[in-house]
Length: 322
Length: 259
Image (cartoon, rainbow over all chains, first blue to last red; front, side, top):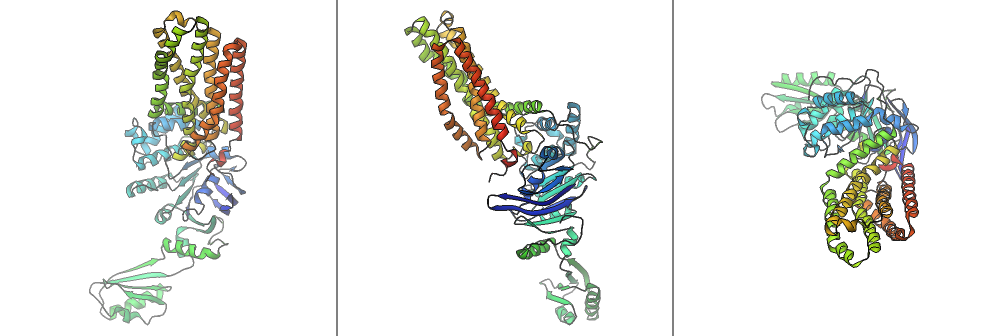
């Protein structure tokens, strides 16, 4: 569980994080989205007990980050975009070092390392120095290090940054597997698809301020009920736009180079049946009708644009991040 | 990636109890020392000063002097060289200490340790110990190489001219001086952003110290045994005080705030 109120961090005149309040319940994944320099990493560092807040407070895993950062650090795991390994060591030696630092006794540490190496499929590389590992393997080791002591809260700061698509996908699968009833996960990312796939909630940060926070689905539809409808035909129907042009609540009508008809509507329940009836009556052979709500990218762009006059946080639910 | 769940370590949900400061310090020191000894550049330079330099010095400088000086002057001269021979490889501690904080910060591998429950004293003390230990090992090798080549080049009979008290004092000054160099370098390294900056500032800051140690070495030749003991004890006390102050004033939560 993470609960932060009015968290602020200043570096001289620069306000990196400004009055940020949020709550991440146990077993939830919160994704921070935002441009470079938005304050995501600074927020994570404050919550991880690595950076003292200039103002505000936060309780992470039951301990105050300002009053007892050591207790917070004992209960969290942190993975950054840089694996940060001692690359001349072998993986078991490296994990053993951190296991001892976290207080695992010899037998527990060895057992845990065996489990983690098997889980991350690093068993075959026990005797190799990590300097020769691929970026994806190094990031797996970093994640194994962060999980050694079974942290209650896991902070993942752009963990898939710099990974090739397959390695990134493998790591995302792991993150989903790590979602545990009693473990909160905070994920910083630039990758909207990653946030949408992994997170229960997404918090969008800009200039250190939280400008939107909600479930991915709610964020996508918030402020817009537009639906993009695409109709494809078996044979070309050049006059298709003219057939549906007169319908109410139908906007952005267009026909693509492949002959597909697209339009936006806020009333798909009434507009779509009427449009399809007209097209069929005109002899159209319809292959498919697809409907898409606004993408997260659209929602993100809208939130960024709307943040010019920010100060309030867009959210549809109480009790989550604020 | 396996599709099975990661087995749980503890049923209680309580984190393991972090080890005490001393245990953490030793873990961190051991890791740092091993890493330093695996660094080829550190190893190459240090072994040059630990093996090649003492032998070369004996052959090119000490042997001619041995023939030109009387027994008393030769004994104190040989003791003085014990200090010089020991100090040169110990300066590796500056580079190692610079790498332990600023270097690791630059490479991004300081963050996991900062995010661990290890205390400031454990991290700082561990890094100081981990930096000074390899340097002292190199110094021991250098002293052995010096004494060995002395025995071969000028003879064991002349080696017996070494005044035992003064020789022990000079040798004891080496780890005390190395620890001081390490504490200063760690103090600086933990407060700057880059390895190069840490190394350069540390080198400049220690120039007066090296001058003082050289003067002390020359002075001890005439001051006697008690002065040697006092000097060594005072320097070790200064080392411990400096390390404690550096650790206590090190604001770990601000290390990553330097932009």
